[in-house]
Length: 378
Ligand SMILES: *Cc1c(COP(=O)(O)O)cnc(C)c1O
Image 1 (cartoon, rainbow, N blue to C red):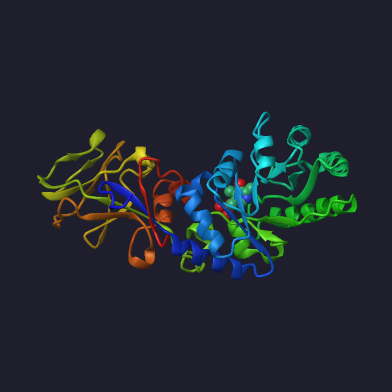
Image 2 (image 1 turned 120 degrees about the horizontal axis):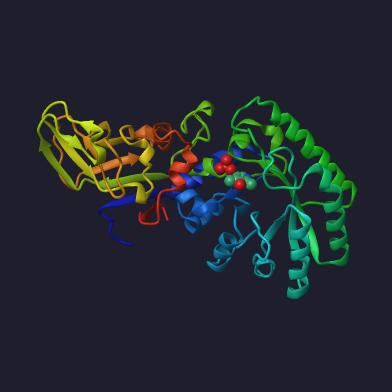
């Protein structure tokens, strides 16, 4: 799209992606960097962000689903890609043929990938995922011997090559949490066992954004940040993006659709949860929960209009919400910044997370498909 859209749009600053990749590489100078671009790069646009991250030195790309990884390859993205969220019957053969590394957490997955490798006539690149304590995906320590044994046998027959051993933290966003050291110890044990059994991984990795930022001993061969690439802080306790040396990538903007004066005592939006206490001006922001503006932030979400931070008045509706300008003037067409960079005086994704009682991950990721992305620095 050449012209700036008029209703609501997300500016995506690809120079900020590049700066954030460089800043994170400085935090983990001895490790490579896997740019996690799952969920359309947390709402920022997977292809554009993947390319920008590679330009700035990302050595790997990571996605959750195989379809996300295959879409990057189909768009011409080269270099190593890992995808980790598989279900039986998934596109194993397509992934093997596209040279995508696939994660294996259990025996069923190893069986399917061996079958796909035979059918494709190619060695599959697999990474064994250890559940070191997260209790989500990954192989339990009690099942690790069997999985490593079967993977080594498959490696000997030539159907697979184990390129990685990896795991994921439960509480890296709470530095000092006792589970962190337990998970590191479990990972070292499971890794040592695999290496003893003849697995020679190219990459061993564990660190998400908070671990990349706070836990050097977790960096191993590769760090795997997602949220931090997009210049958003993984947790308020860790600091603001600026304190972490990061710059927000997404700025969500809208053009005011209407500004009008209403008398005192006027109810605003569904349910009349907000009532004006004096005669005032109301501004209509044409974005709602269908665009990813959380309805839970009704009455609270901050918006920059006319040089001041205002708050959502009443409920966020499907397509629009209202802010009270407290009698200030503004005009239809004026730009409202829903979130962006605090360094420019704008509200942030972290502010919206607080207003909606959620995490900033969810705020940026849920900005909907109806919102055009406008790329800067492409
Ligand atoms: C999402 C995800 C990441 C990135 O997490 P952030 O906290 O966004 O850095 C890394 N690894 C895995 C397995 C993930 O699912």
